[in-house]
Length: 172
Image (cartoon, rainbow, N blue to C red; front, side, top):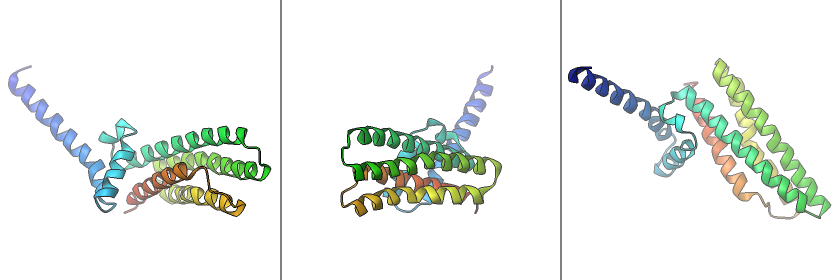
């Protein structure tokens, strides 16, 4: 390869890399201020493919990241449930487990909707997933105890919001 060809190829690769990297940056900038931008960028760092993904790819990647968080939360739920002696609290933990189990299915449905272009179904599924942390927290509140999943519910809620917002951008 001649030096001029190598330089042209290098220039093309740099242009492609900068234009695809800006899809992620442009998407995250649409969510508001610097804090929100940083949270969005950090969220997508969980999947290295996000750096080169288009908007549809980012939405699919986001569903995968949030789904993995739901599965991780279910693991913690299982651990707490095994050690809980209070029957009422066990029931609340089981309720949360059921909700997070359902979240995985909602993300699968959303990813299929995004892939097929059926964005209405995807948005509906993601909107349902967004409510799960609040439902879980509400059940603990009704039982008169603080949720042991505050951190997980917060993280999952943020991830659901990002996933939903990225998916909604596809409808614009």
